[in-house]
Each structure stands twice: as C-alpha cells, then as structure tokens.
Length: 77
Figure 1 (cartoon, one colour):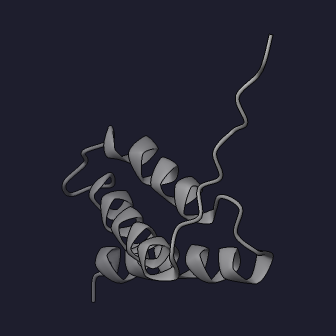
Figure 2: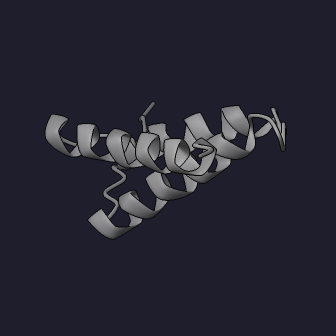
C-alpha cells in the first residue's frame, strides 16, 4: 500500500496579502452594525490559509494587515 504525499501549498506573497486583506474585511462585516456573524469563521479560515507554512515574520505581518483593515473599517469617529 502506498500513501500519497501531501501537496505543498506555496502561495505567492501577493496572494497571501490579498487573503489577509479579504479576511479583515469579512471580519469587520461580522460585527455590528452589519452583524453577519457567519462570516467570522470564514475570515479566520482565510487568515489561516494565508499564514499556512509562512515564516514567523511574514505571518505576523499578515496578521497585522488583517487586524489593521478590520480596525480601520470598524473605527467610528
């Protein structure tokens, strides 16, 4: 019996950044006033996909992008 090797997912940097950006937008939409709470797990999954097998510094940058986008959308002056 032979086992298949797991495929390695090597996303380019721009795709990872786009996933983190989209994740921040979806996470902001999960909170009031929109309140689409079903988007929160999707946003977390997108960030997990973006940071999968990324180096620690790159993962921290992607997390910052997601948090900054979410905070920027949710911030009310």
